[in-house]
Amino acid sequence: MRYFFDLTGKRTKLGLSALAVGLLFCMTSCVTLRDADALPHENRPVQEPPEISAPVHDFSPPETEMEEPEPEGYPEYERTISAEALDWVNWYEGTYGSGTADKILLDRENILRWNRQMTADTPTMRDMTALPAEMSGAEVRAMIEHYELPADERYVDGNTLISHDMREDVRHNRNLDGIPDIVEPKRAVITARSDLKRFPTDKTFHRQGEPHYDGIQETELISGFPTAVLHTSSDGQFAFVLSYFYSGWIPSGNVAHCTADEYRLFAAPEDYVTVLARVIECGGVRFDMGAVLPYVGETADSYTVQVPKRHPETGMLTLENTEISKEDAIRGSLDYTIKNYYRQAFLYLGTDYGWGGSSGGVDCSGFVCAVFRTFGLYLPRNTGEQSKYAGMVVSLANDPSGVLDTVNQPAAVYRPGHVMLYLGKRDGRHTIIHAPQGGEKVCVAELSMANLTGVSVFGG
Image (cartoon, rainbow, N blue to C red):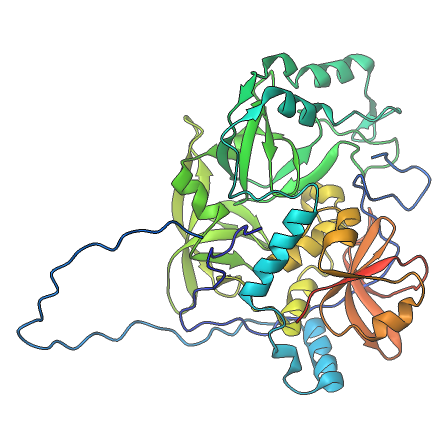
């Protein structure tokens, strides 16, 4: 799938390249609570661009030869790298040789190949550049009704019991009778980070005493994601949308409808900037790691980008030029190297766990997605699908330690319901960095060999 990349598979540069990045893996018993994921305790929820003719010109030679101006350029911008990430970079080069951490492991063409393969293989992934002109109402209804409310007792914020009447109100708000026979997907762009839920409500469905796991939270959609709006709730407050990896309900005010040309700026950009910071505010909008924005220009220290916003009256997309520091972003996608892998992963160190990205946090599979998005690699969202379709998957069922001893490239390690980023075997210990579970933070830990199922490797 070519989602958020130069359609030619090349990254446009202007005398720029990425600096060192670092990443580190931390192990603990972590869970992600998606359909294919599970809680670590008994109370777990069930769950080729168009050809354009060149204009005809009269190329009469000038009477006098004119000297062409030198194109404006800037020196390579060197971004900082955390001490923890740099420590792992130094270990890697001490183990595998000087300069190995800067070796490009996958070029743009191969990254595109990985994306196409994952999109073709993964049931939930979609090519957002190829939206259908129309869908049957029955298909849309089936997508909405695929989701069910938790059958057991649930509480709003873990305190107020959700009654039968409250459940019926939430179900009714899906507006199923309002789905036409033919649905025309409407192109749109996410303008504010949004919790994507199974039902059109701002209520949370927690078990009593379990504040970290909302039973109807699926994932988060970050600002700048292209999407398609299929339906609207009865109260008009929620939109049922498609993203590249999930469908579900988000607040209507967090999505802006747009033209085909505007949509292309985000779904198939030809010149773009990728956010490298874990979180940054740009033009009054929160952007998370891996978000992509249309490129306008640059200075020695910053890029000018177009920030997507929703017109308060029409609900249409407006684009606002805003500056973003080169410390926090890069033109195109980040070079896929071990150094950059370490850099990006360690930017999440200490981040609160958030199931499905709730409360602005990150869960284990969301963490993995965010890091790889900076390289232009788009992975399935949940742990179960990542463990089957993300990269080259190798089984760890028989000799996990022996297999991991051979891994010297970015990789994700799986156990049932959990995924971790692999850092390497150092001082005799296999080490990971991950988002463990509710109430904990992204950390580094030694990897236990128990219950490991596989490892996904992305490399040359």
